[in-house]
Image (cartoon, rainbow, N blue to C red; front, side):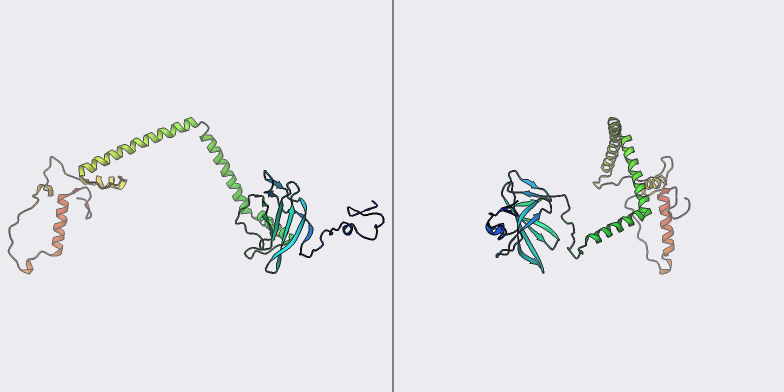
Length: 293
């Protein structure tokens, strides 16, 4: 349209001799100013919550703004750029900076990046020695990963087996808990029975401790204890046994005269006497020294 240049009106007598920016004393977008800033077209790299809006509003990813671009520092030799934009809805200013270390953008003022649920300890490209990949390299690695996954027959078989097992567990749960009242009744009955058994065992243990006059905790009876107890007999009321409980606690012995060294009992004779005494005082079904009594 005649009289307009790039959206700015120019009078007919000046048309062709100057530009609309000069007539209206404006700078063309992208022109570097003396203070090191320039106006560029900036596109939101991700969704951002605007803190100036009441209530907070979200600026969608991909929304474009005229931003003031400025260099604010360096990461090694890579410049850090700052983009200041104005939210047209509320007029608030937001500042977004580049992060060369993590190859990302960060919101430093006026807003907050939307949380997409990614873990905070996620390792990004360019961090801790992780190489920065191009789009072609990412696609090639993705294809290689899928090819390896599809070629693993054992993993497929394991996945199939695990899926079958999970289905069985689901069916078993549905079968067992189809009637919750019956299941709870069965569990309560079992628990009540076990509680009575434990109560009888506890009463028997306490009674035994009272008879023995001890406060030491007694271990529960085992099958080995029962088997060993059956091998021991503690005497018969009709048979008189010359056992240890029939003798005096302190037996008086007449003093013996010293004898010669040749008449002293040998080690083997003392061992045989001890064995005979133990067998006499303990009527065991099984001889602890070997053989039947």
